[in-house]
Amino acid sequence: MRRTTIRRASLDAIVAQAEREFPYECCGFIIGNDSSEEVRPIANIQNRMHAEDPVAVPRDARTAFLMEPKEHLAVLNEIDRRKLALRAVYHSHPDHDAYFSATDRAQACSFDPSQPDYPDTVYLVLSIRAAKFTRAAAFVWDPTGGEFVESTLAVE
Ligand SMILES: [Zn+2]
Image (cartoon, rainbow, N blue to C red; front, side, top):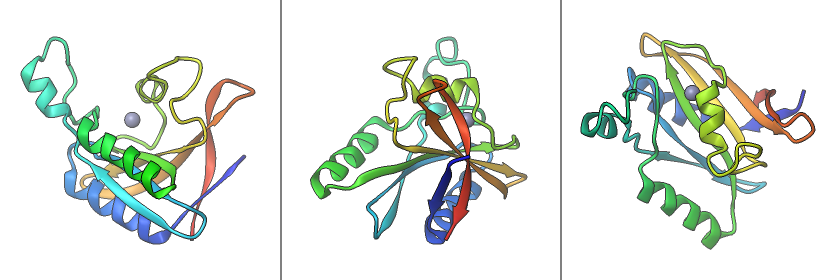
């Protein structure tokens, strides 16, 4: 199993966001380099999209997330400008386990179903039950198997 390392401060920030946004999914990025890491929370606009068109967007933010596009783009631009790496994409599962769902996989491979948009990035999923953090799991792309596999998550 591959090993993923994230900083304690990053996990603490993500857990606080996920508990605060419960019962809705939260989302965002961890960016950084070998010596530093920063969390960039992104607004989940799934509730707004669902309210505007519940037929086309049947799920609300309790079981789905959609990143606010301008905030999403701003983080990608910041990574370019500061020459950082996109270390992790994260989201939470309110009242569900920390697994990588078929929807999560489809969303991670939005341009090409056979390859993630960010093949070298870790995907973190946080399980939040009754507004309390229970577990985080990390998933990485396995190019040999062509699937996401769970990775050991070390918090340092
Ligand atoms: Zn999910």
